Image 1 (cartoon, one colour):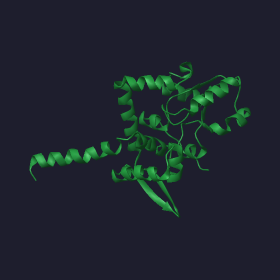
Image 2 (tube, rainbow, N blue to C red):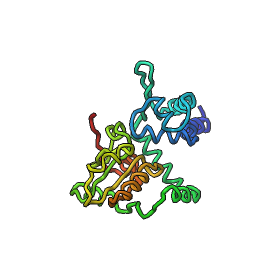
Image 3 (tube, rainbow, N blue to C red):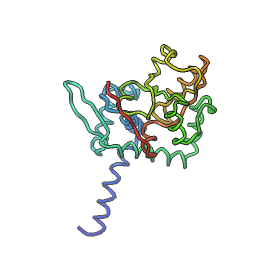
Image 4 (tube, one colour):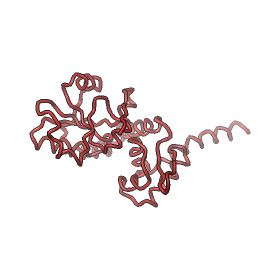
Length: 222
């Protein structure tokens, strides 16, 4: 094989990754899978698409070796093929945010109350959580929390939050997080908590952003 053909082949293989991610829904599916293994049915419901379309998108991601699958009875479960896949998504999003004004504007619009977004460094937040000065809550579903969560975080799914307010201290700041900058569950949690008299704020990080920054992720057993 001559050098030109070899270079073309090399770039073609790398381009397989870019092609597989060149779809908004596939990016969302990768973000959902960064939270842990999920069935096709769960992914379809969370992404707001039908099962057939979800399967087609997952097939494209699998062909690029970005996801892996296993069968359990009549159900098929997908997972990311490696932590580097979620880190790739974080890098891609951060690059888009740096260069695309349209994305910056859209991100500003999804946060109803920008003043609730904590700007402190991750190291500072981790130290405060370790010392008990703040309470970090993970408002994702319990299965996602078990698959991986921020250190010292408590699992408090959004759909259970109002019923479990008594579990939270009234004299400390409650810091919520969910799946990352595009996730709105933490905004809803902060609004609910503030309406009930809590001092609440959010961080835009999810587990992918936290891990990409070199910080530890913990897991739990059910």
